[in-house]
Picture 1: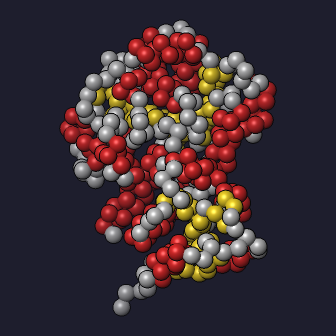
Picture 2 (picture 1 turned 90 degrees about the vertical axis):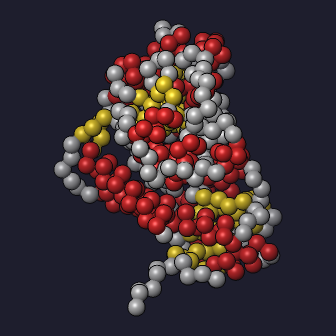
Picture 3 (picture 1 turned 60 degrees about the vertical axis):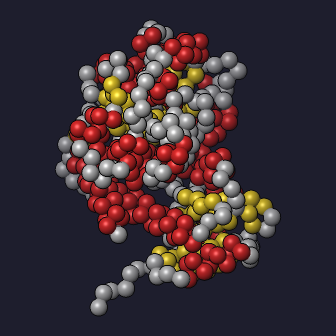
Length: 414
């Protein structure tokens, strides 16, 4: 007789009604998840949840007529071992990002089916297993050798912070400074701009690899990846929204791991949307460059993401490198106040160079090539030199990569 499968403990926080009934019915009709409680009032909420020891907390977007964003934030801090999944009322990317920045590790959009719900919860279990395995490896004391960075993801929770500009010019300057083979990977599945930034004219994109994501060979990758006159290569996102919607995080992960075998370093433009694809690319990268600008809203978003990275995402402090773009811009937050807002030191600063940046974008020529002596280009070049000198534990990182591969293989078989 096979041993019984361990059930994942789930608490539902939702007022009585159709949504609560649907969720309860879905969780009661299968053996993977155990519905340990259904709560519908704020009073004594934290105490009741802690007593139930859930692994997943499924939380509706409103409770007692008020938004539950503050509850998400509180639960993420108090119960960091439980994954909060938000139930959102509509397909609103801004609302989804707010929930993720508050500390949710996933979300599901109404209306949803029982199949959608169970699929989302399974994904949460998979991600938590992956993170816990990573933590176990990091705490092991093993003999180590060192290697340079293999991958860097550039991300900002605030739109307009310049992730594409910085990622593009960082890729070019790393290639120029080190002679490494560099790939620029477009991680924004929707509304990417690398094609414009590099003046590339190609129909090839990452969607061409999805059907073969679990078994990619070098010849196919080279057919799809686009060379650029600067010497770097680029893997573009789809320019078709319907194609982009069909790309799963696991497919992106497999593609990302495959291209790392062909290049010395991969630079990812993850944009500003906190999607599963973006989080997958952050999880998989050696370093995450968190980009912000000297505007209070941008700094506040960066500060909240730093909190999220430590709690929900469980990143070690050295993984996230906070970089200030457009430093010294007119009307911006004063330099001495920026680190007070972030509660973290800046890794680098890129001066405000709006005129040269705009001209380089409109011409489709990277800033560091068109205006190599401009203040921003010089700062990015200096940042590239600094990043190229970072070394990592070869054994520890390799073990984590192997564990991710095993996890994804088992999920496909399952």
